[in-house]
Image 1: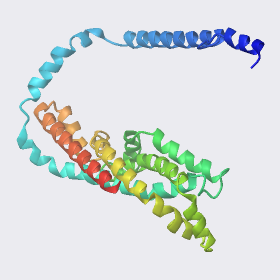
Image 2: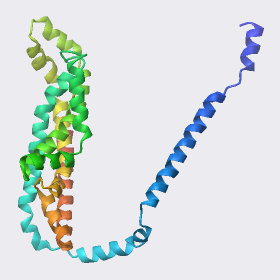
Image 3: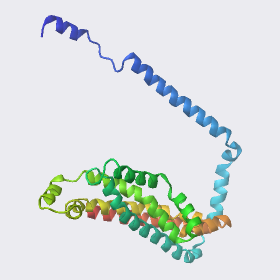
Image 4: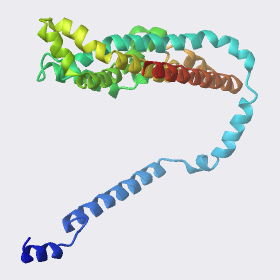
Length: 273
């Protein structure tokens, strides 16, 4: 290195950002602060603050009316709770059955057409994930009537996008050597999929399905609020009649169900991996 080059190197001053970068960073922070202030102002204008300040007293009063729980009411809840578990289980199973072909069509290494079929599959995934299960249930209750069937289909339609997204990402990360070996034997496209791809993603399918089932147990408990059956229907009826001791029993039973489903899900995923 020459003396002139070394002198120029020593004259360079390290800066975290350029002046323009500093200006853009400060502008971004000011924009965030301004948006936060405006959002809080809009929320504040639409809030009745007298109710907010009185909330601790109202909450304490509500808790006093809900305690002790009316344990005798639990005998009425076992059938709706069983319906809730069935809705979550059947909805998840249906979503897995529908999600596998959607994932195959969405993955770059398995889709028949990257330009036509893959965008359609991705649209199905995005549409499913964009609509909450309560909205699906509300629409389905209008179409096919109230009951557990509407709740099951709502959970399935909501879960297809979740399962399809995680699964197509798993398909894109498979080992291509096994696929090439199957193709070298003259296997058809269906045989390659059955023997070269699905065995590699089978653990992912099981893990994703169990994980989504755990989530669906939580979601199924509230679908009854829109008439889709399950224990949420009993919750809505108890709240409407101000039967707070019954509400506390329902909430405790939902909590116990979610804890059990979380434990089962964790044990199954651990066994799979």
